[in-house]
Length: 268
Image (cartoon, rainbow, N blue to C red; front, side):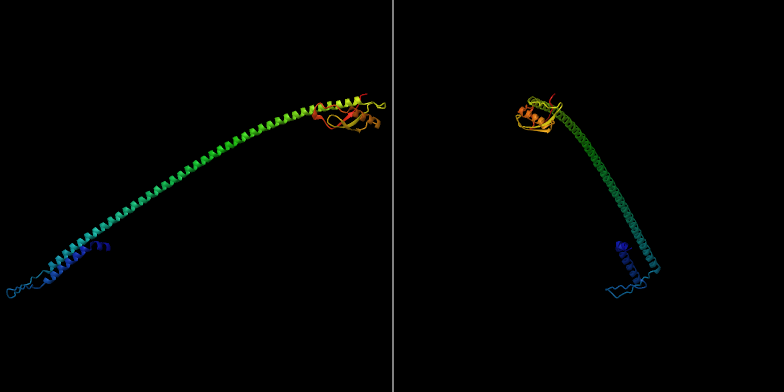
């Protein structure tokens, strides 16, 4: 109502002034004479016109009805304006709600798109990580297979080398044993050739002799480590070793030894 008064106060003020002026005019002229002053002569009395009160009331009623209709039109215009304003506000609210809904839907769609993009990126990272892990596992398997092959090849080479070394050592040992047998046989033969058989040498007698020599075969010491049966027999063998000095050279320098022990068993 306050908004209506502020909007239409000029019209209301004009209607009130007009209505007041009309009332004052009618009241002044009711049951009175009107005095007219004339400077040219003595005043004359003018008869007052009697105004019909019913006509005044009708005129007032007409003015009031017209003013009421005008106020009603103004009120209807105000209501229409308020209704239009309400409709505009409602439409504005509806538009704002639609805009908010669209903005929310747009935001939700953007959020779904962001989540989907994150999911796609996560899947891509997981797939890349899985591929890298598979490639790394394949590389490790290949490296392990290569290492195992290398180890197997190295083991086979080591085994072949070991067998070759053992075979070489076996051959060397066999050859050395041949040389030792030849060396010992040559020494026994040399000693037997130098031996003077005692008359009391029993059949089948034997003894063990240990000989110390220097390079070149010179005998420096002779000991009987297992007696031939008597000191006389032992001395005969010792004398034979000394007479055989220098002893025969070994077939190979590797079998030379400063200490030689052999069994003296002369043939009968």
